[in-house]
Image (cartoon, rainbow over all chains, first blue to last red; front, side, top):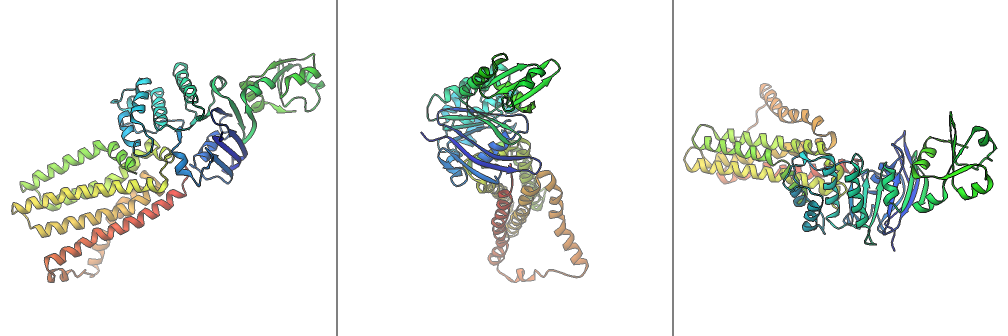
Length: 286
Length: 214
């Protein structure tokens, strides 16, 4: 099966910030969660994928085609929901269909209306009267109504209440029910990604620090709790990162079973994605 | 591209409706003889000047271009759609102007040929202003480009005024020696040249958009 996204050595510099050698792959039929703190480069990566900004180096392939050379062809198969709703306040949902039908070859007006019904969006109400949740659902309906094979979502669930988020996440799971479909989902809300993502790529200061299957990451990584004195006894390289606090220390290991075998006296718990982010983002290298 | 033109029409439907009402108002007053036909053509100019900048303002407010760049259209088509919208608006507004001219001429209130010439020149001047304003809007954004509108409108007037004060006079007497049809053909050149200008202007705007990041 063709990979939905293949990024190799992506570089983009803004002077004070740079994406450096970003590489990851989203296999077909899967959801990849792109995580990272604010300013880590998630949106920049997505902008490069969509050719909204020029990259300085590297290559990007979407659905087996180069994202620059075959830009117009592949964008027929890509649905996009970014961090805000871009529809003018003076438009109504039914206007969106009139605008996007000539834009996309496979626009399905019936499907769009089905999504409006499903998300309980009134077709005749002005968008300025919509809540943020309604606007994001409308953006999602517009992204899905041209039957894309790849969905790219940048913080699409940010600022939404848990009920609306859950509804949207269910829609994502329904979308990848078709094995040809896949989703790149950038989000701060780690619990959402733990729920739906198959793969995780963690960006930190413009670089990929972790990328792989979510289950494998959660199975392998561990959080070590210890005192400062115990920390001294751990060999260099035994832990990836350490956070020292007034009541003890926390460390991150990339292989908790191996760590347990070497240090049977120390407590090693499974690390959640949030633990991994916090320890990599705020911890010190050992 | 049609979708994007349609978007501009839908977003600006209230504005377009207001302009249509103004035109109807001027039409009635023109027919009743309360206004000279030049008032109608002046109104058309106002429409042509305000629409492109309003369209850019609405798009900036919604950050539309960032979204439009995710469409399978390409940047040139996005720019082309805005030009097409301005062109269609200009043609529609001037078609209304033409209708008023024909109507008032049939009623014997004005001379048809003279009115036709006024509409043709008015269309040409309106398009010239669009030719200059659109690349400026792409380069600077609607709000920063707005002051240049006044420069574009008033600079030729001031230049002509100064030229006449300095003793330079444009000799248009050759038009009087021509047949009516030939003179109208000369006036028709103005919007045609402006259309060629629109093509050049589109190329400049495409170049500006190609360098932009969203």
